Length: 515
Image (tube, rainbow, N blue to C red; front, side, top):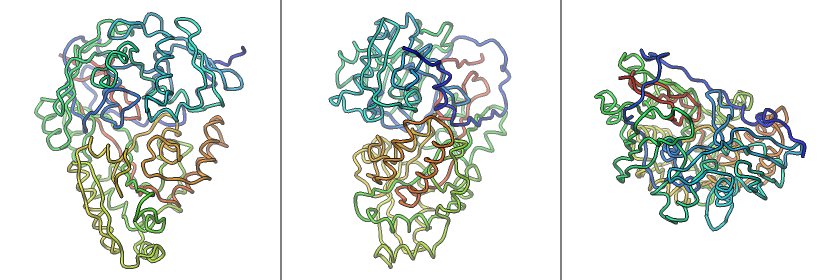
């Protein structure tokens, strides 16, 4: 069959821009990497499962890249590169893909990561019995075939522009089929991948310890002997541990401490502008937010500019829609004109339109952390000015995530980080079939337009459709768009080799520690 080279297929992956900088470059920059040592990592959140088809939060995804290798990798420019798939081709009609796998790769249990294993992983996600939220994402795949031990053929029901981007994360992490069969429903506590590190110990709510996998398929890697992840939801404690030297790296430096860490010669930082998007999800299927006018009233009442200055100390910009400037040409600078600026008068008018001229009350659920608490309290004050009462309820992350997934909330503060194709944000959240559409948002026109964006290549028409979609979503207000935050990763000056990738996930296969 005639095939195009992989270059033609990469148009879907180059839609976002990596905007990163390093401050206080470490003294070992340019030196030969040293082997050995254990990296101590502080991350926000907790873990329920390390089974990729079932993960629900970013703290789990932080660990996946250490245990698993994805089918495709991401570069700091946010383009797609080889992973377990070393080369790939696509037919001119976009309906057939061929993956050539890295030869000789083995899982941590010694079994081969061959074409049969890849087929098993993809078919597992597509199987309704698995119950994976990624099933709808991969639904255009109608057949997976192992042509030979290192060749996988995919047949699609329609062209699917974002497919490879999805194989850089959850659907692309390959698990040992033998281990999945062995552990069954408990596999998420006993993950077996092909990544640079293997599971050594998991103490619930305390730490996860990984050890170097000596048979890792990337020659000469990893450099580290191991990685220890600690869940630390209080940023004051996390930053104190970094300063005290009991942590080597933290996933986020809170905005109020970014200047101090940047100016401290003991540390170095990676700054990823606009790569985390705090928002309020509104449950459109239940009162009071099944009323569009009341959703719009909340959006008009929130003062985003004050949030940027008071909570994020200028390390953010107001968000007037769901599409961040990270997405370059898809970002619409005009969104500030049709989005929700701070306008108490319009908020009161929307309250009257929604049948609640004297205001209403609702529960605003948050993750238990000082930063989210401060953000929620400020938003509560904004809403009170127009007669809306927000009752704040805090939960631990895993509990909150269960409530979000189960759609058992009225409003909840969450966040998102970019995927290499904009589909990972827009379809995920705003299609009625989206796998993280916990708002129960449904707009038939948006659904139709999102389906069209998945079948056409990057270019002027796809940009036009996404800008049209954003206007419709902003009008419907299933989110209260808040800000695009400049995410900062902080680390000791002795840590080297961490790639700056705009999805804000730390990858340690090439990381090393200077003695």
